[in-house]
Image 1: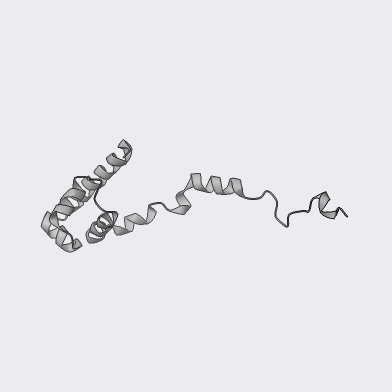
Image 2 (image 1 turned 90 degrees about the horizontal axis):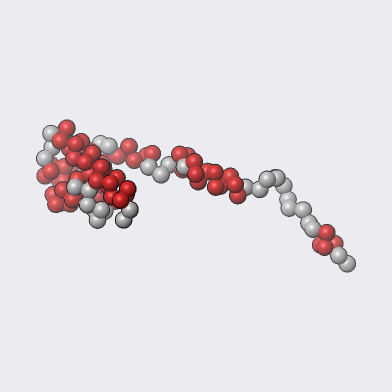
Length: 105
């Protein structure tokens, strides 16, 4: 796993922990609200990369932060993907013209 990815997972875990603490919830409280095991929540907060994506989404939902996921991989924000798509568009609109050998009798 690239180091940058591992760092982002760890930061997400830290942010989830801060959100839990700000709400005054224990690990057991949040785990119960999310319907997961305490050990799974602890692993998520510690940034362990083996924690399932679904667990992350469920915990964010339990914290009321699930709307923050709307911007993740938003196609409208993908400038690189848009540029690649635009480079593959035809330069002219309309039907392709036939080449001269199409009329060879």
